[in-house]
Image (cartoon, rainbow, N blue to C red; front, side, top):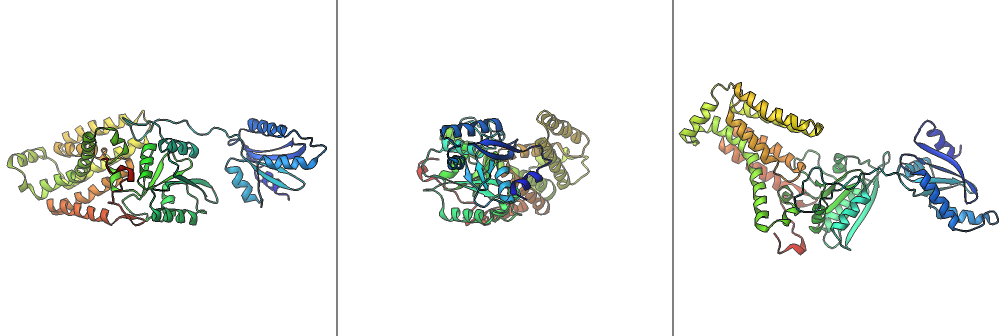
Amino acid sequence: MRLADRICNRFEHDGDFIIEEHILAGRPVRIMGFKSLINLPKTWANLQSRVREASLDFSRDPDSALIVLNRLGHRISEPDEAALLAVMTAGDLIIFYEDPDTYLDVVPIPVTLTRSIEQPLNENVLQGSASAFNDDLATNFGLLKKELNSASLCTKVYLSGNHSPRKLALLYLEDQVEPNLLHEVTERLEANKNRDLYNLQRICKALGFQPWKAVPKFYTTELPMEAAHALRQGRIVLFMDRFPFAMILPALVGDIFMMENDRNYPILFMYLIRGLRIAGIMINLIMPGLYVALVSVNPEVLRIELALSIAESRSGVPYPAFVETLLLLVVLELIIVASVRLPKSIGPTLTVVGGIILGQAVVEAKLVSSLLIIILAATTIANSAVVGFQNSLPIRLFKYLTLILASLFGVLGILSGLVIICAYLASATTYGIPYLYFIKPKDDSHDG
């Protein structure tokens, strides 16, 4: 059976598949593709227009028809079923004609399937560009090149996967990138071209990252200015088709509390904002554990008035300080997870119910102390001061370590937890670049 007939039989019951017979350049041809990806009327009109521009008499010179047809697209040198399916699922049109049997890969006029450039959804900008990356690779390239007007910006595009091929783009500044970093990333992407990459976990596996690390190896951003700043630092930016954000390699500790948008403020306020973020990180790590340590392990550290006030607020509470703190932290985590997943019209209602009504109810029921509600509210607010949702996840995890150690060893346990966290961060590397490394752009030597 002929290859075109096999393709036709395979998609016989697929309502999205197109296979039609037409006359083009005086020869019978078959066109194949998918309706959802190709604007067929405009594409066919464009092909006919290009044939008419040739101004040749195809009835007198049959060879001229072959020449014109071959100019319409790229000839598939070794056509087979897998090759044709890869071309069609990528959104291209196939033109088949006989004598000799030829399959052409034609770039059509596509159906618009991407949204327009919008404001960022997860990263608010007060002073700076309000454009955000979207699902289309070409749009993301354009946004980044508008932000970073440099002739040394290089782009490499990979098509990864056999079952569901997807484009992956790697961008870097030729005169800024770390050579070892570029070599490692490109080598791993080349070696994993056959792996289907359709989520971040699979990308991490393809790049050789260990899956059970708490520290992220890359961070994501919707903002072109942040991606451009990372490129100036010598880092690498990855884009994946249908992913509306940039992945920046490697992730560094400065990404938790430093943003390029901070430089649009006066330098004094920039440092104050960054200092507040660092304070938020420390509050998040220390406050829950400090409450447990001072209430249950080291109450002698407190002044007598404060100790009596805390004891009065806990009168009638049936659980130890560690248990009540852990229970309330879990409830807060559930509220955060639920508010992220719920529709925007319902999310604020859940926050009000969970944050105000539930908090007041558990205090009146003598299940937790009122002081603990204040401490955990401050902890949750401080966690939101971190740059990027992905960067806040390790901090949310680390605070449980300090909480457990504080319940066992008191204030000494908190200090031990901080030492363990610092040692863990110091041991984390990405392709030989330490997580605690601060990169400064070469043209940034006099900036903050």
